[in-house]
Length: 355
Ligand code: NAD
Image 1 (cartoon, rainbow, N blue to C red):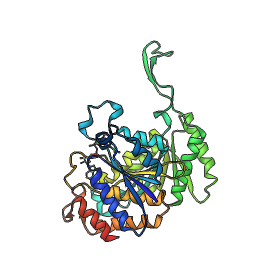
Image 2: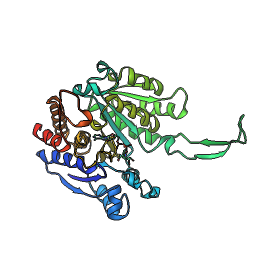
Image 3: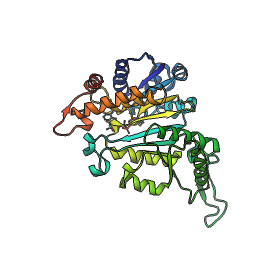
Image 4: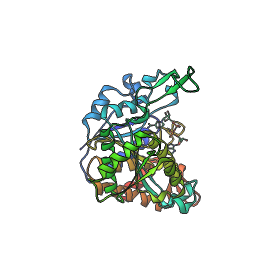
């Protein structure tokens, strides 16, 4: 199994090296090769996604990605900015399915802005379609308003659209993810107002016939937003389009209150994927040895589950993370009085020891 390791910028190299350490501690043979990406790609090869890096990502069974970006690149032209590497990888690898779990370990319930009884033990997964919807639909732009009371004025417009195949493939990803978890799937739409999402609902209902072991329900996006803060533990897996998923996954992430804990995966049609923490490169704490490596370590666990067919190893890592939290070890971002403050390296070592 070949894994492309792309540490990136800021805290990326610090946190990715902890995840690599954890992977080495498993009794598995992985071939790992590292390449520069983002600002590091620009420094080394003059481009945020150098050709060699892309070739390595394409050839690998999975990609473990740290984070990219630094304020010092803000003056570069857009095409050369570090963040372009993520968009390039999504496009070239055909990564259309974004999986973002929001898990709140009982030990960290105090980190959430919601009452502990509402969120403690939360474990949900949001599956967001990543390459379609109103974010990419054509035509779009600013034009002269052709009709109505504002005729003749300028108007901005976008196009919401989803092809049947696009909906089917993300629905399969979501049903299969639900099969690996609590076997419940909520499809979030706005079918009461939008044609695109009535169509979405019909197709998801049709795909459901292939997954009789999964319970499917449908929810309007406004209600889903409300339920996420009212009773988030009612959900197991949520599947939705690009725009609704963008908004709901950030809301779900913040339920947990600790950005340093949240992994994510972006998958193609064959379950090859790119795995990365949900947070950015945190330039404010880079090089200080205090970044929380757990989101990246948990991303490596997702990689084992979704791309490498090693669900049992994923569970070992997840159990090890729970164990270090139960031991009271905390990086500064999740530190509370009465727990033990540790750095990035110590946290990685503790996970390895717990394994
Ligand atoms: P950020 O997620 O990097 O940081 C936000 C805050 O959270 C900071 O205070 C940071 O110190 C803290 N934080 C983040 N991860 C942490 C961790 N593992 N442990 C402890 N604390 C952590 O977001 P930002 O500051 O808005 O962006 C910084 C850079 O990251 C920008 O250049 C941005 O474009 C980039 N970015 C990259 C990605 C990505 O690579 N996928 C995602 C988001 C932002």
